[in-house]
Image (cartoon, rainbow over all chains, first blue to last red; front, side, top):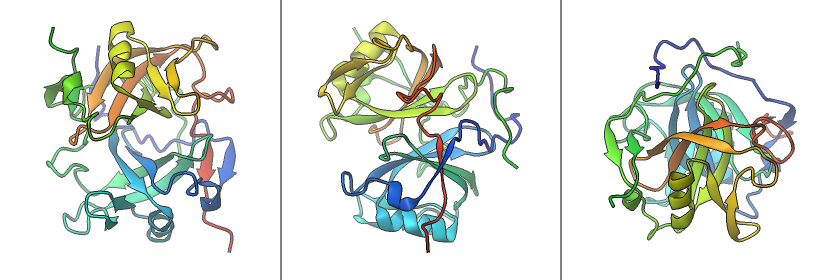
Length: 129
Length: 129
């Protein structure tokens, strides 16, 4: 039932876009760290969930590459700055509540620090009885 | 450049799956509310970011439909219970750190309370100068 997506054409989807938003529409006052879903714009594969604060989003828009706030290091984190696996941003979507971002990217390499293409490489099965 | 995805074949992807995980691998002790990305398993479209606590995940696995924790209502929320727009779960992925979920679904209808298919219907443009 589950198909391999590597043969999918470029995903780069504007499907569902109805409005324009701006960085000031993100509700950083309610949530200083906003979850940012990173999706491969070509394949549609979800790569990572990371977090952005106001400055990370501003830098992402400026550099057109993903910049996150690392909760473990408590510092801005330009994805790829050590690994070389930058993520070129081709689109950003804001959700209805203004408290989640979807970032469409062309990745230079694997998203995960383990070397996996996606951080979501573990399929969940029910709890052991 | 951006293509419409409505013509995409079933996405239902096992691409990138390398391991099996179980609910007890989710780090609810660190984060009682875990972000859950909901993705249309057919089109690859990201629909919603919602949150699950331990009980919501257990119910999601049991019902094979999405159940979240509503932060605004502070209550369990079986998606579709009022709208009829249930989301049948066809796969769940856990990320490398055990603190984010990706839920692949077949939606019965729009994901967003606004009636939009996806909550991510706002394309972001840079801040006004």
